[in-house]
Image 1 (cartoon, rainbow, N blue to C red):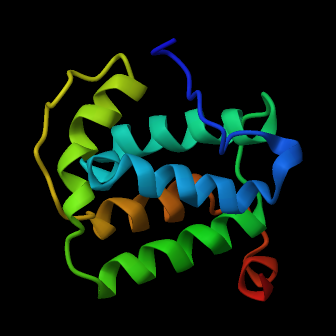
Image 2: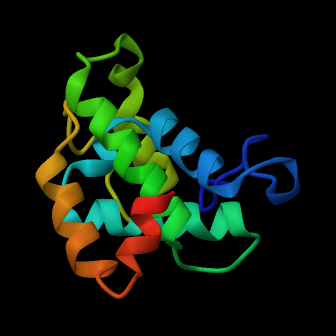
Length: 129
């Protein structure tokens, strides 16, 4: 089904949901940060998939996201990122397949989404995770 994530990584009973969250983002690649709307849609879909149907991201997941994207900022492009745009296009059916051929993570999009959409979280708790 192209409307949802179907991966063995998405099994809430198989491990830490925040780890699964970043694993899925890594699989999707940089195209999920093409713009604010794409990242929001991706985060919403992934949060539902890893939580068993509950939409939203908690403090441990945001902490993992920050570490994940910080690592992306310090590494060069991975050859697997070439599939990023088609994967995101298939994952988010409202997006055109291959609409963007970006091979770089757009960290300004990430920071805008985290600052705007998750400002209600307990950031002291995020920092402890």
